[in-house]
Length: 452
Image 1 (cartoon, rainbow, N blue to C red):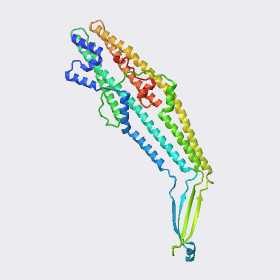
Image 2 (cartoon, rainbow, N blue to C red):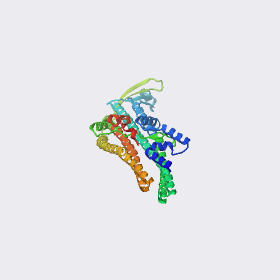
Image 3 (cartoon, rainbow, N blue to C red):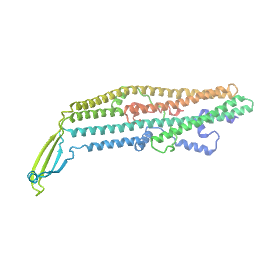
Image 4 (tube, one colour):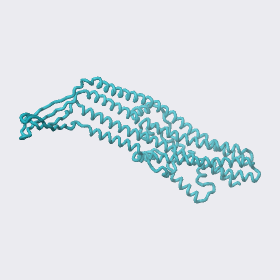
């Protein structure tokens, strides 16, 4: 019984020891646990960047965005300065003397002339479309990199939830043995034995659910990387609490200049402006130059050559041309208003994220530095009082729940902090999580040894 009590104290004092030692499990299982612990991967900016590069080459949506960019690049080269010439071949049916005089074999060519800069404007529109598609491809990558980072942090959180559940299950198993031993010696009641057995059964069921949630988090990661959905992953570990992020004009200026979607909207404004210019120029006439020659089929002699200049007369569609211009100007105005509205919402989102990041940081520090140490002391005291007969078992269970809640809330707060930091990185267009140093959000390693 004393040995069991000592083991229980070790479990409460050091969760890492309980997971590695397995509370009296075989030596082979202990070595497996220690080996798994050495393979733990911390979700760092470098790790996320490695996954992002793999996603860049494998994710179907990013490959599709790249294909659209290539198509837009090809369309720039496809704009023609000179249209294909029109060849004409014909004959004259008449009396022989008329055919001999005028020629009865008619052939010629007509070429549309690249006047008024229409081809240059068409090329400008194509280039603007290429820039928009390039900005869209970059925006898609940045959005999915942020999503990938958030999924990785959620997977690390799920890993921590499973770890806490496994530790709690081992603790409940030990407490069940202690309660049964005390019951046999008359120091505990049957109700206490049944209570701890019920808690152990509920924890076993919840642990299965937590493991399935962890497996789904791995599936989500594999889906983002276009791997097989059931590909294995090493254990992921949450980083330590990140430093504070204060709302300031620097963040807003980064967002206003570099946010991917806003940059794409600004390129769309340039594309719409180029389309307006091209539409205005389209009402100018199309001019073509041609030549036509006649020969007599009887002896092949040349009879005459005609030079022609033809052009369209945009006289009857003036209202239609005006409508085209009004349409494209309205689209330009709409795009400008969309960009202005998005920039305002972006400023609000940056402020909102900094508030939430700060709240998550305070919550994580609260649980790490105050709630968890107090809960550990409370659990140790309640367990000692119960084992010595001076306390009730309900206090032990309540203290255990308080400690579990503290550890889980700490992990959730850290995960949420980094997920929102990923959103902030996207909003500010900083590229990746390594840019967090630019805004002061570096991991707080001062109390790393006290991390739960």
